[in-house]
Every structure is written in C-alpha cells, then in structure tokens.
Amino acid sequence: MLDVARVALPYASPVFTVAVVDGAIRLDGIALPATDALDLSIALLAATDLCRWHRLPYTSRAGHTVSIFAGRIYLNARPLDRTDALDLACALAHALNTTTVRSPR
Image 1 (cartoon, rainbow, N blue to C red):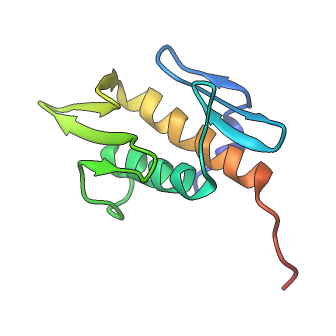
Image 2 (spheres, one colour; image 1 turned 90 degrees about the vertical axis):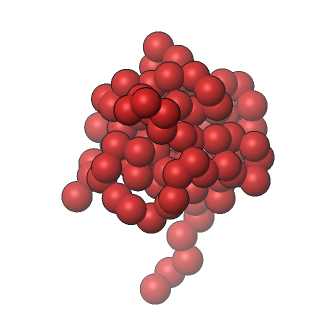
C-alpha cells in the first residue's frame, strides 16, 4: 500500500508545489478540483509503472497533462524524474485525503 502521508504538505518538488489553502488543493498556487487531483495522482502513478489506470498521455479537465516521451515523465511539458513523479502523486493524494469529507458507512 502506498503511504500518501509520507509526503508532508505543503509539498515542494524542484518543479511543482502542492498545498491545501483554505480547504482547496493548489498545484503551483492554482486551485485544482478534487477530481483532477485524483486523476493526476493516478496518471503520475501510471507514468511510474505503479498502476495502469490511465492511458498516457493523460490530460485532466483543468488542462494538466501527464505524458512520457523518450523515457522521461512530463507534467505540463516540465520533466519529472521518477521519484519526483511518485512524490507529487503522493502529495496530490494526501491533499485530496485532507480535503475530502467522508460519509459515514
């Protein structure tokens, strides 16, 4: 199981930042809908070969694109190494986990 809490928020990679501000997920300071945060997290995991949920390239409804070209992972045309992609996926999932209201079972 992937431990998303291993990446603290706010998270800053050499390329991107993820934070929760006033209950909203922000990627590089821009609000990111929860569905996009989930989809981008899954797409980044797909890029690191940890899951096969999304076909790549993947573009979210908000216009963020995860792709692989010549063996490198890209988010919005900015290169990420595998570790940064995994950490970013965890940060997005962690942010989603902290902002999601769960209904009782």
